[in-house]
Image (cartoon, rainbow, N blue to C red):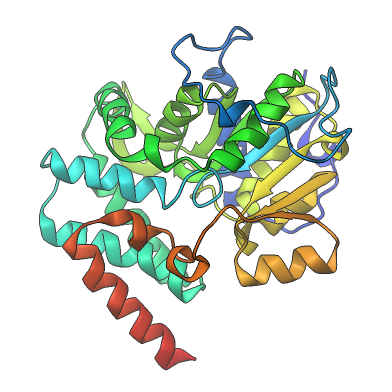
Length: 317
C-alpha cells in the first residue's frame, strides 16, 4: 500500500486543489502506463538514440530512478493544447472567434509571463466547454490524428535524445503537463515513453462533464503529481531527473536530485545558474522561438492575438 502523502515532506506549498489535481494525474497515469515492452508503433529516429554528454548519468539499471519531462517548449515546440485546439477547429468543434480567443489566451501565458487567476479560469472554462458532452473515446481517436497533423514534426530532437537515454538505461520516463491527460498519453505513447501526467477532466460513463478533477496540472500541482506517482511507484526522487523550460515548474524541478533547464525562459535560466542546474538550449534564432506558440501556429487568428499580447505586455512594462 502506498505511503500516506504526509509521510513525504513538501518543499513547496500547495493548495488542496493542487494536491487533488496531482493525485488524480498520478492515478490516471498509472492506469494508462505502457507495459515494459513499449508500444510497437512508437516512432524511432536516429537522433533519439543519442546519449547526453554527461556521464555516468543516467545510471543504467537503477529501477528507483525515473525522468519527468514537461511537454510544451521542452519536448515539443509550442503548446500541445493549442495544437489540439487547431485540430478540433479543423473538425468544426467550434467557431473561428473561439479559435481567436483560444490563441489569445495561449499567447498571453507565454508573452506576459504572469498567471492572472481570472485569466487562467477563463482559459480553463473555454477549453472545458469545447469538450463537454463529447465522449472520451472520440477525443482520443481524434487526438491520434491531430498528433500526426500538428505535433509529430515539432518534437525537439535534443530533448527526445535525453528521454531516450533514460529509456536506454532502463528507467521510466513520464511527461508532466497541464495539457489534458488524454492528449499527453497519446504523445507519450507515440514517443515510446512510459506514460503521462496531465490535467484530468471529469467524465461520467465515458462522457466529459465540463468539470476538472482539482485544477489544471500547473506549477505546484505538477510537483504534487510527481510526488504522488513516486510514492506509488517506489521511486527515490533524489535519484530522479526532471526537465522543463518554465520557471513555473521550479517546484517540480526542485523536487528531484537531477533538475535540467531545457530551452529555459529568463527566470528559469537565472534560477538554474544560481543553483548550478544543468541547462540545454535546442532553439535556433532564440528571439524567433522565445514564445514558441505563435511561431508554430500558422493561422491568422493567432497572429492578431499575439500582436495584442505583445502590445499589452510592453505597456505593463
